[in-house]
Image (cartoon, each protein chain N blue to C red):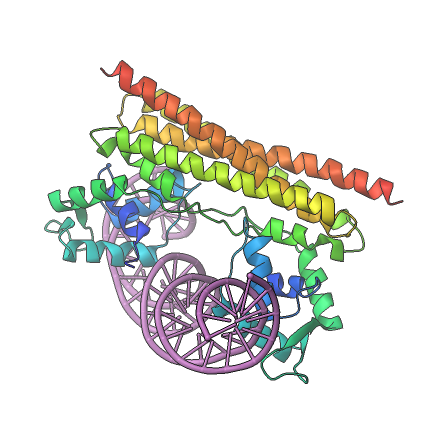
Amino acid sequence: MPKENHTKYAILGLLTTSCRSGYSIKKMIDTSLNHFWKISYGQVYPTLKTLVQEGLAEVDNTNDLDKKEYSITEKGKQELTNWLQLPVEKLSVEKNELLLKLFFSSQLESQSSTFLQLETYEKKLHERLEVYRNIQSSIETYSAHEQDAMYWLITLDYGIKTTLAQIEWCSCTQEKIKKGVKTNE
Amino acid sequence: MPKENHTKYAILGLLTTSCRSGYSIKKMIDTSLNHFWKISYGQVYPTLKTLVQEGLAEVDNTNDLDKKEYSITEKGKQELTNWLQLPVEKLSVEKNELLLKLFFSSQLESQSSTFLQLETYEKKLHERLEVYRNIQSSIETYSAHEQDAMYWLITLDYGIKTTLAQIEWCSCTQEKIKKGVKTNE
DNA sequence: GAAAGCATGTAATTGGTTACATGATTGG
DNA sequence: CCAATCATGTAACCAATTACATGCTTTC
């Protein structure tokens, strides 16, 4: 079973946008793909190197030894579109520390810390939502003409909708716990 | 910065339930925690060993060399409840292959494969939803009396709500793409 | 002139999976 | 008696993070 390396395709994909250096690829992922992908420099640079070795990307460092300009090759484009069409095999399972803690919360004598957990979590979700909405409106005003824009907005919409669902669950859960405590008293 | 090992606490937490062996811990995670946690045998057994070394768990294999019965110690309980109260530092970022593919979908000439991706994904989400609802009703009928039950239902509710949000996003996105195609023709 | 950001990279380590190996027990 | 499930474990490997090291350029 050949294991597919998604990170490789993430980088390959970003080479089709205006990203040309390892640095800008990392930055792009940290800003525009941050709600469904992340990466470290320790992966970016080695991966770029292997992409060149495999003939999927080319590098131009004629001007400056310290600055490299990468671009995707025809073979690379082929490999990317090929991967894009491969069906997504399985739903991802996100490890969620909050849920893990909640799962064992009956071990705690007082629910006050569980409550606090939910409260701070919800606050963070609201912050995240705000960030998404800001990106959304900035894409809508500045990049609406680009052909990628529609798909970028779609992935953002996913982030917004699932975050909203989590926020709802958060406040709903706080209510439940409040009631649970009352009936046990 | 001491790195916390969540997997260790997952196992420690399960030792407070009726799980007593590495095998049953793995099984429990695969069934009841599967929407927010997963683990492999390659982690379970070594972790149990270190838990015993750290004095957080005890092992009893007097009856049978091949079967070991683990239990949590007082020190282990202390460490668990301590961890439960530590605030969750950051929202998790789930790597999502479907979103990664969608993000670069403008590279494809035809949107038919993007459509297919969304369709099969939505189908999988519906299957997942069904599974969650089955677990939900089985907890409600068989384990409602247990003190853990409430928290188990809460984590399940999270799964159900976020899955519903994803399903809605899926059909919504399919509509958008349909319209996008039409206006470009 | 200092700080922030641009820019590239490696080595050590961690967290985790996969494949492999073994064998007992239970139910049809 | 055979298949499924129960049960334990290791070694090789992979993906990824972290910490470290270096130096340039732009902006205040």
